[in-house]
Amino acid sequence: ETGVTQTPRHLVMGMTNKKSLKCEQHLGHNAMYWYKQSAKKPLELMFVYNFKEQTENNSVPSRFSPECPNSSHLFLHLHTLQPEDSALYLCASSQATGTQYFGPGTRLTVL
Amino acid sequence: EDQVTQSPEALRLQEGESSSLNCSYTVSGLRGLFWYRQDPGKGPEFLFTLYSAGEEKEKERLKATLTKKESFLHITAPKPEDSATYLCAVQNNAGNMLTFGGGTRLMVKP
Image 1 (cartoon, rainbow over the protein chains, first blue to last red):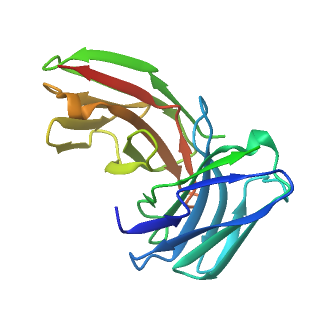
Image 2 (image 1 turned 180 degrees about the vertical axis):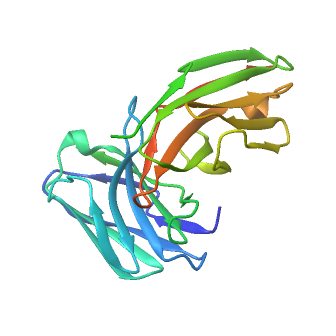
């Protein structure tokens, strides 16, 4: 449970707000990920960072902006979101292409 | 394009009633197949990684098996605390992306 932490755990925001999600991993991994989990849909990969460099952007709208200042921290900056962006946002980390370990998620509601 | 299909979508069992969950997949060169458990409102918890056909792994009441086309998660004598959504994912040789199935929601009644 404490290997990957995410804050906040819950977030309610209006469509004109700007907010950020934070993820921190304490496992010494070198890859970090953002996933989106919507009701009735499989987990969707959004972004991948390897050694702080973004290596995957899975056709995510520009209103989602990731930032990876170092191998332990990952942010997801949110602005002008839509109600359909309401979902559980999950962060994960791995050592290279190894097993991914997930954080508890941030439940986002866009009004 | 990699694809993962899990069945059934939901499964209700009585405590002690053993059963299996299915994960069918197509992948361009399998690096690994992963099983996770997810409780409501929480992140997925890692259970197993399988790398090649014929491989089996066990943990308490759970046993995962792998063939070239599918994986099974066998649950022996389940308890109510095994109730959760079980997720299957595949990783191909190209990188570290995971493709997830839709999950199986397991409910075990006392």
